[in-house]
Length: 380
Image 1 (cartoon, one colour):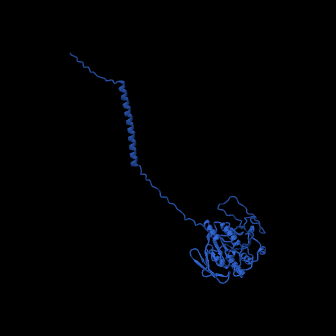
Image 2 (cartoon, rainbow, N blue to C red):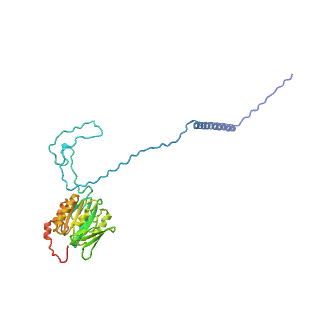
Image 3 (cartoon, rainbow, N blue to C red):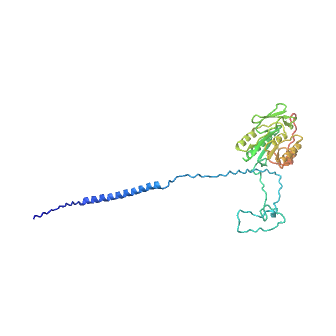
């Protein structure tokens, strides 16, 4: 009996420690990469699912609707013209005032109103047991200050100068008048309007060209700016002039730096002209639109035998139209009565000015005024 033995040989390969270490690192890296890829895949699937299943978000810009109410019209405050002839009244008695105070909200505290009768009204402005009333008293018609002319205050929104530029105004009168007039115009506030009317026999707006007829002095032509001409005729003597056609209508000038500078030049350069007629410039003054608030009327001479009648006529006209006329007689007292009547009849003032430019009483100036002998062949 033969027994056979089979031997099975198994071979076992053993790795070195270095190889085993490398194998472990590869396994770890593979595991990490697999986990990362799995997470990324999950995130990607989630994003795709969100894109498909979530509702679409639209960016809609809402329309903004606004409402703008109409702009309120500005209330234009009209300057009220107040006559200087104002009779002040005492304040109303306190008992006549309303004793109710209205409010938009209701107060938890009640305020008792004392019942007190005042038998006699108080004459003290603003004093009493209630809200006192009074009035304002300024230098103008609500439009600021003014200027002066030989010490006479000129306060008004529209100021008109009527100045004698006759031949008798030569010498010291001429220098005194031009200096004072230039200073007065230079002091005009910029919110004023003004105009200058010069006169002798004819009357013209300052700066216009005056052409007298040669020889007989029977007329004159005024060449205004813009080329328009106005003719004047002399009906006999230095005091009897009239327009031959349409009367010139002066326009107001804004009292700005440019216009005042131009007026200064005109005041210095305009020449004196023959004749003296008060009616000529006053007629022009009352053609202005709007009328002046105040007029300063200055002359050195009379206007013939009818000076008082002329003063009464134009004083009445100015009073009806609420125009104040201030008059100044320059170094001549012979027409003081008529000049004073012309001014005081309108609520204005009359002044007599001496050779020093100072106001003086009529009696004193009459004593100092030398008597002049009339020269043959020459008329005022």
